[in-house]
Image 1 (cartoon, protein in one colour):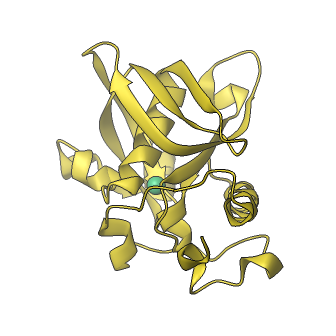
Image 2 (tube, helix red, strand yellow):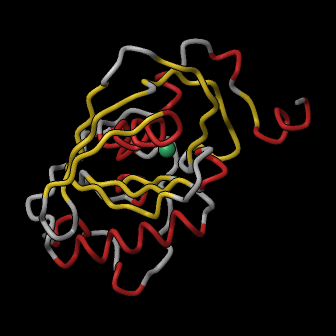
Length: 183
Ligand code: NI
């Protein structure tokens, strides 16, 4: 599996450098993970969780740390998700998502690979998801609203798609600080 990591010595890194928009890896289809239980996948996933938390993000996909592999990490702070308990940092390998309702909602999104900007993005409000854990077992569930949004955003990264591509009107795009100051 070491072909995933040609450019990184991830044994020695806990917070990985982020790829930014313009890096071709963010526009490529990421490779399926052949063995979710491989030790280097666990090392990568742990480092991605550390990187996400250090960057105050709620999700991070492997291409955002320069690795073409179909996995992402995410979590939901209770105040962001408007839920009673945090959804703890979770790793999903080879994820798939299907909408469970056609209903979509516009809300603000940003991206660690597109710093300082945010825009309104339509996403399905209710999804079903499945993927593999680090133990190689299949996991599946449903997600709504903020969690569903984060998961759709991260899955898009594995298909070379960024939130800007999903915006239906670029007029809402702006710098986070400017938008905050106006609201
Ligand atoms: Ni992103």
